Amino acid sequence: MKHSDLLSQAPSLAAGMAAADHSPDSQLSQTRHRAALVAGWNLAPGSTVLELGCGQGDMTAVLAEAVGPEGRVVAVDVAAPSYGAPVTLGESAARLTAGPLGPRIDFRFGTDVLDPSVDFPAGAFDHVVLAHCSWYFASLGHLRDTLARVRPWARRLCFTEWDLTPGSGDQLAHLLAVLIQGQTEAAGAHGEGNVRTPFSREGLLRLLPEAGWTADGSEPVDTGELQDGDWEIAACLDLVAGGEGNPAALPEPVRQLVLSQADVLRAVAKPRGNRALDAYTVTAH
View 1 (cartoon, rainbow, N blue to C red):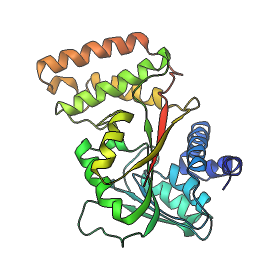
View 2 (cartoon, one colour):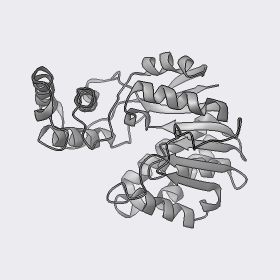
View 3 (cartoon, one colour):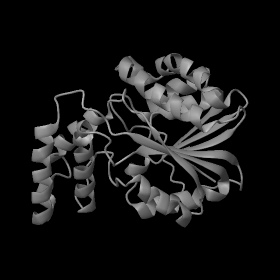
View 4 (cartoon, one colour):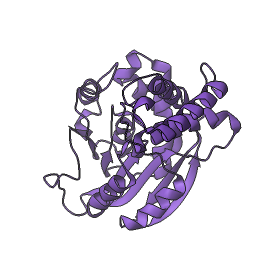
């Protein structure tokens, strides 16, 4: 599907998401971002796709639109259908499944592809997709093992994540929020946030050959419409203020480092409208 064609479908795709009932503007911007990503990956109609970390299906819906009625998307997530607020994964999946894209999508929640019972034939998929989910992994080793596990199943990898290198000073608040959450997790205080293992684009490119993949290229992705900077700043400040996994449980030197960075975060973050970090996309075979 052409870039312009897929982007033109973004409003209807966003309206079909359950989260649009609560924040339609945010949902539209998230869907437009994913439509631009998928258009750049040039998925042919009729393609089969394995999506890892599908969450509420923001990317799933766009992938299903791109592959067309003859295509198929197997959307996998380790989380249970009851996870998520104000809309759970199960509720969002049910909305998509009941809509026109439903026949093209197979949601599988509570599924870890590292479980030996989860298996697919070699070459079962044209593409495996990970979109803004890799920082949720417990470690780089866990991500490497997952990418190695799916290597025989898919011919091509399509990957996107936030870029830790800020392109401008007004992205510093998002960067700090991410690093604080990553340091807290690395030191053993596990919270409920999504950011567990933030790593750089260069780190991913070093990891891919270890998992059997050869990168074809990497491109920057504009994120000017996205609200993720605000979301991660709020999650970080809630963590530091005493949420589950708060710094009180950390070794004292790490705790002081985290608290000092949180002071800087409060000083540079705006009440809202903080610019998100840029993202990048990588394809590999």
